[in-house]
Image (cartoon, rainbow, N blue to C red; front, side):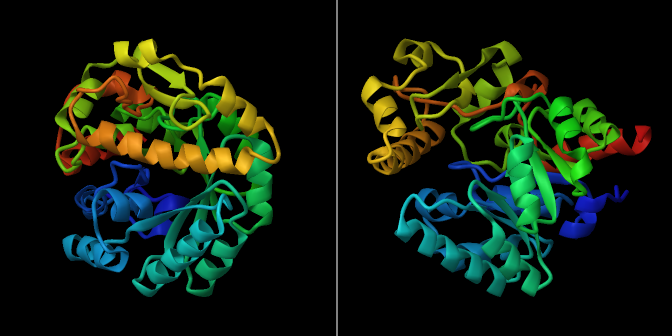
Length: 328
């Protein structure tokens, strides 16, 4: 059954389900499995190269060997360093050369990616947490929005899914629900409310194809909505993670020096680079090893409440779309 929406038409997919790009959990097998099952797996370049150890172009070729269906590419558009920006521009160019036509962007101004994507018939969906960022993305020419709400994992928004949709619906762009979808009923509710699709991440960590450590997957299965907390200890800004004794003992606020640096115009950039490097190292270790350290952080959203088992990606997607096709 094909569930057609603006998202499926834009992405060339059967079902309006995106697997959100995750650092460090977007391993090639997971990305390919979601696309092969009719959704859209989205590649996270930093994860592909620095966590899973692939040369970037070779990693794209490996994913392509696992599925001939479309895949997407994530791009965080920020200028924390010239090196990062140059690397991202190169990754976008290579992605286009390798046939990628769907781009998921966040932060910054995506205009240069929009221009490159549109030259080859591609589309760009930009992540936003509130209307002012959505307006800027619209003005940059994006084709759709991914509304990151307060139920998302990782760097979540502050508005609930319905409130955020109501805020964005009159901008003339299709809107994807980003966060809080962990079971078929939530998928159906999002579509019925007006979203053109959903972006799921936490649900796909608890899949067979994801190479995250079994302890991480079990933590998701066992957690409830009340177990999700926001911590500043990893990246300097609130990060949605599973509450554990280790997380709570470490505290949820960053230290006073980092807070001061983030607020000072001369030191803000240096602080962001320092935090980015530290968080990449810490999140990689947390996801790929067992719960053996007081510094482990398991990113997850409130959708954990509906996740009761670790299953194959194809089975997860079929559960969602079979419910949707029966009740839409």
